[in-house]
Length: 227
Image 1 (cartoon, one colour):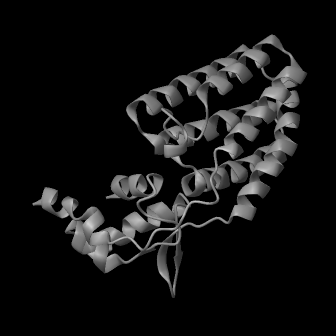
Image 2: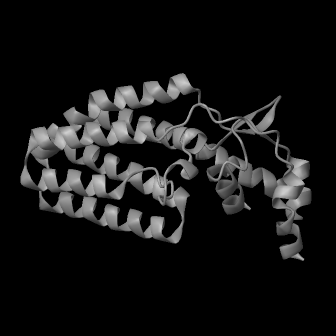
């Protein structure tokens, strides 16, 4: 149930702001409201849905203004984190970045966009950890989480010919890692800023909104599979 809902959000079959009615989801999946509620709580903890006493559960809906702010702030702090990373990190930290890229590429190959988006954010957080600046690391962790929501809302796989939406371009991560291994601060900072600009350029704020999803139609097969 969790995976099906996540995939529907990533594929834009569940639009931002869609209300996730427990009764309808329970009918679609053929399970109790209690089980649905546990799934919704998990999704809320991952900031994929919001839960409120009066409105229930809805798919997250960051604004276009918030999306631009998130990328603007990241372009301000990540060059500083790159410089600090090169001051403190070494081969072991580089190896962690390389392993993260490999995992991201594997997820992308398998079509697991949720995992790929998470790993793309993890790559940046590993740089923050290597920088040994706790305040900036905490700030970036929040920004990476918000970036994932922005990508899920405004990222359009259809607009990227032959490239699934994985939240990052792996070859740009490799270029950044190469600059870090060479110890070239300026080059690494330029790659980091250019990479964020490319990511922001993939967002589409003009996509027409679809009508509310029919949860029974969208997830009804799950009930049949359960039988």
